[in-house]
Image (cartoon, rainbow, N blue to C red; front, side, top):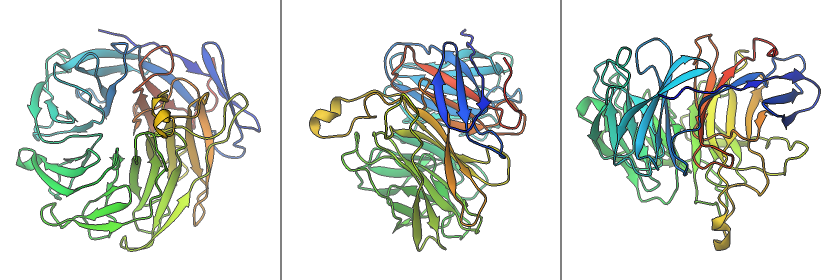
Length: 427
């Protein structure tokens, strides 16, 4: 068993955005005057360090795996060939348990889904899903049964595709987009294929774009119209995505579908990822998914001591973080220091010397909305496949993240507690 360490963040309000790394704590200086302090978060290490010393951390499903009423997480470690789950005891204490070992491989995405409809949330990774034994509250070290299925690739996400009230699984490996029916033994159906991307629809690139009551799916530049129950021809439509030229690993996005401007139509929010010089945009649905207007968000400000430009926004989420009644946008740059692809004319994973940032674009509530970037954290720990949820049960949205390829001392998983409405944290 492994117990987590905890670090605290002391936040103060001033008139500029500046993030400074101090010994043992982080202080963020915030410009938000007359509004909730979006920089007011407390960081806890779920695990620092994760098992192993090499790159490759998959996940991060966030769900109540043991049925005790709070949220736990799961991660995989490529080097260890093992999937773990971390039992939340309190904000500062998370206990490591093993889901399964052996033949895990280089797995990235994952999602929490009740694949067998037994009332317990399972975890789905590429190629394999693990059945929750249902007794984890009293026997947390019980092994999870391993089940193979046909989903592969960078992106794994969940959505009710056939409208039967159960979550299904959507996967994308950059070439083939598929969905798997949990009501039919994980029966797989190809939505579309023949692409050359690195990633696309995760974590929430599913939603009703045409207003006909079912869930459609997006990848970079295209959205696919659900034929009604998920079976049949998924008609392909275009939307105005702008790829990063010479991206480190090719075209790749994180995607989120929601009604961002309150006009009744589901919009597309996306961040570039797996490449340096990424950006965040929202793409306005002008009705039925037939026409779109692309709105680039301003890149986050560069603080003293940092370098300009941006890294890989491999974390994306939309939520009302400040509880003012409108959705805000979160994106986080990943730590990954890869630069080997530069010799082949590709961009580095981030500009050399850049300190990765977590950023919330605050929605001003106007029509159309204007989004202003607020940096909530700079430097290690960075962000990779962050997930959102009310982890501590206090009614607001928190963030859980992990690292794929570290640029610091350790591989880690992290919990960022939302204290925006609580006022400055006292040490």
